[in-house]
Image 1 (cartoon, rainbow, N blue to C red):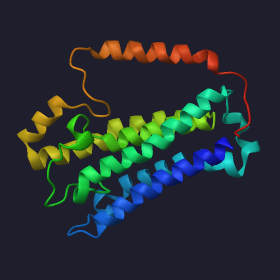
Image 2 (image 1 turned 135 degrees about the horizontal axis):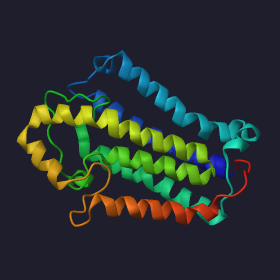
Image 3 (image 1 turned 135 degrees about the vertical axis):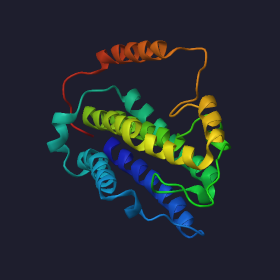
Length: 222
């Protein structure tokens, strides 16, 4: 049951995103993905396939995905369902706020304007935040450490490669306005000015240690 719920949530998120992207393509300007370059396009396709494989695998070939599973209490898996479902309206909020600025590349449109409304008031890349939250939720729903690992790898990929390219394009277009905007917002989460990064890191380590007792013997995706 949980695996099917995870797949339905994933398809709902993809469908929602696709609707807004299609609407943007019907606008006055569309940026072809090939303008990013073959390498970045290939990486995007590979990352998408990597994200989809374990979620679909837990539905179609659950017996062969046992090796990537760990035991979780039902309340954790239902928590994943709640978080996963909540990412869909979050995606709607983000893409509605972007409007015709929606781009499927790291490039900006000629009439692109700097969005500071909606979730962009606090976060520079809320769509990525929603995506990461979605796959963290799916890792709970499917009780899969593989999905969790892939989500972490993709988050690192965004942080190291994609976001710097996007922000450089925005900095080139908007200059000091974008510099000021980055000082008041966070990349994935709202900026907490009074808390140093070391405290955030310690909090994350403590959270991971607290979750360790939940990790047990392998159990079938279900």
